Length: 242
Length: 242
DNA sequence: GCAAAAGTGTTGTCTTTACACCCATGG
DNA sequence: CCATGGGTGTAAAGACAACACTTTTGC
Image (cartoon, rainbow over all chains, first blue to last red):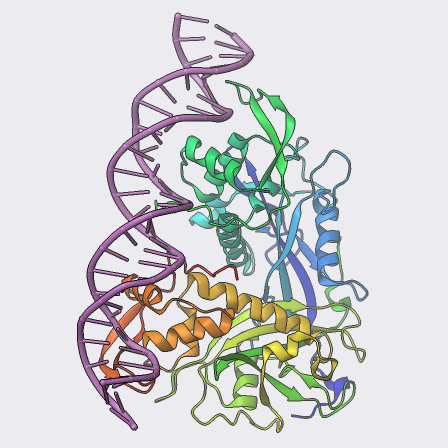
């Protein structure tokens, strides 16, 4: 069908962020209190409008930095957060004010030593995803953000099966046990520490020993590793049925 | 950052379609000749503007029907094509006319008995993806469509590993050998027919025997199956290295 | 009979699992 | 000493790859 390019229906385009981390053995998502209508006072995912001169990934990285201070590139001692596009949500009526298409992005971040996520958006908080997705109406997210969050969590859960992405939840240097606790928190299961150790250390390029040891978990000192170049885990880590 | 909702930068939103099928042992994509500038006369992916009152999946299904006649719901004797969102492309400058955000969708369709894909968009054709992605400048796609196609092909290749999606390339009733030839075409490998047979028939819920047999491939008659309810294949089908 | 494709059996190898067991530290 | 977590050994069960072999059709 021929069209007049000057006659296209105008849309607003936003980026929404599903920012996940593992804190105290629980998978948590970053949420903000909405300061205006609609849904004033409710929890929502951070996000904002895409500017005319930036691409989608840049808009997501900018919003992430503005609201949390997290970077997607290594900056000094901080590990880089992982950012990837998740999916796009564009139902008419998902925002009552206008036609909005939102390109959701998924961010996996290490637990911050200084955990205050509040950037300029005041009330940002880490909330365990079990509470947000569990059902208490109290903590339901605004707009279609519960759906977006669920899609992001499912993506994270399935992607750590066959990639080294779980390391994005860890500090730059981490132990095998810390990595295992990430898997346990994200999947909500217990894994055998012995078999897990063999699996991750036995996959070439997955973990690179960095030399030192640490005892920050108690017990016998554990070797420190950083993530290796291998991004694909084959055969994959098997997610237990239960 | 507070904003004035009436002051958002306007975008055009389109859907682009990566429509894949398997014809004569080759993975093929649907391409159309552009009838206008820019890139007039070059190959491109089918697509079009999202209307103000439809959601993204509906827009993709509408464009698909307009350009190919394919349906995403079963209609009589035709198998339904599979449609899913792929990714969103929004670099400034990807379309020189204006700021366009394109939500690409992936469609997996059976090889049509009446293969004329031409809907109202005249020049639609099936082209082997090897030719489109191989490199001959002759057959390069317009805009960033080569990138979108590559992403769609990679999604299809990886998704048939762990899901029953390969059946979307087959007619409603098919044999194990036909399903195997789909895997071989999509992955570009040869698979052992005996082990393949055991794998797919041994996974509960993956294939449902439908009773009859066919001899359309020559040789001993083969049992007919349709896709079972199981959408997840665990353990996955292993894609050979070579 | 012969070619072609479907389907079954078998065997060696690799992976996963479950669990016994030892190691190195803090308190 | 003991609790805590780190790490190695080992054997049974399962999955996969390779391939010999039988079955059922069309010609």
